Image (cartoon, rainbow, N blue to C red):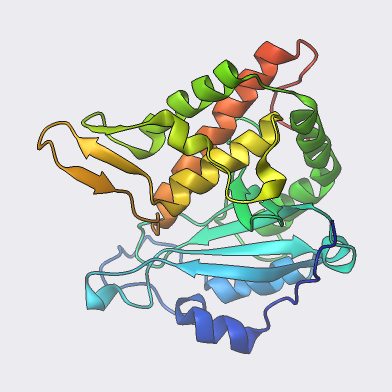
Length: 275
């Protein structure tokens, strides 16, 4: 498959998409003990380690006073993957807010080009790094970036392993059923088979990694119909736009996929990746 190159976002583009990245003080409601680090400072630090921002998401706010301080997530890709893009790429995910609704942290992710799906790796595989210090000493950003860079190849090997594990129809349906509580409360009833419907020809496959991505896309992007058992009314799910909910669903799906891989392949190593 031919993968089109992606151009990193410069600071003008970042400011246009997410002004909150450039906020230079915390929300007035946070305590004096809050250690403020401007997100753009961390972005610049990550760039120095050959990772470049390619996408940014910003949470919506109901309280206008929180505008410019809300949750945000910046996705980075390594220079090597920008130079030679492949079907899948390891991403570095930077989470933050300036109102204490989201702690400063760095996680690992996977981007799948065929469907533009952005997965978030479970903490059981690669634990997120909390960012508290930036500078010459105790640089949490440098440590996190170095560790994600060092396990890039191991993560890609994990993807190849998941692609080699084949699921039969019953196993795919069990995966779908297990994923429902990640998105839908108990009183919301859906047909689990709807989560297994592919949206492109390339996804008509039986391997664990493709099934993971199909379920993820249907859970995140919505348009799944169901019935509210309490009110007996029908509903259609909407796209998840919450950064926290998106991350929760993604990590939960990855955990389920890890469990399935352990069952299907006794040699599969589900332990957390070490740098």
